[in-house]
Image 1 (cartoon, rainbow, N blue to C red):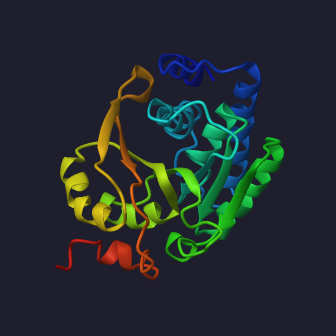
Image 2: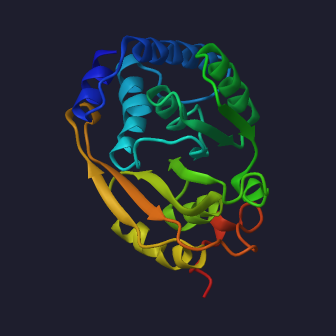
Amino acid sequence: MQLLTSGAAALGIPLTKYQVDQFTLYYHLLVEWNKRFNLTSVTEWEAAQALHFLDSLTVTKVLPLPFFAGDRLLDVGTGAGTPGIPLKILFPSMNVTLIEATKKKVDFLRVLIDQLQLNNVEAINGRAEDLGTNPELREKFSIVVARGLAKMPALVELTLPFLKIGGLLVAQKKGVIHKEVNDAIYGIGILGGGTPITTWVEIEELNGPRALVVIPKEKPTPPQYPRRSGIPRIHPLGTME
């Protein structure tokens, strides 16, 4: 785990031996399950350290730390657990909920949570459009993270309904994102979000800069959002006017 440990140190978050052991077990479980189910296309040792684990930890550059009792983090479209599980490994006291639409991935996540002996972590099988109307989840989270979920205009509708007022959405992006963020401004306003701020993170171990688009939740999300399954991606807010 040399690449992960050196990259984490570059981010200012040195890992303990126990955390490195957890990440190592995470990797081996991911590779084992990937032989049966298509969890990820990235399984090579060093690539996994960079693209699954270290990339997830870049979120720490914009998180309001430390976490306090009652703070809840939601990872929407978590896939094989990123960035939610790496963040939980880093901050064991964090209360984490993972949402994933593919049941086989949720099965993997539940085994992973058990094997890593993580407390206060829940993996939920479902789509964000449906779960965003659930009163037990709607506007209940201090932090919502999303990595590889969708383009920003759709992503904000899939995530902002979960945030409580005063919370933060952190969307992980890379590449040229200026237009993508601008295209989401209309929807952000409708959904109760504030002005997005983009922070760039660049360390040698990631082989390219990463963007963290942070959006504060300033007002309640109107009850008609999110719209029904599939609509936010097909017709993002602001594209139908």
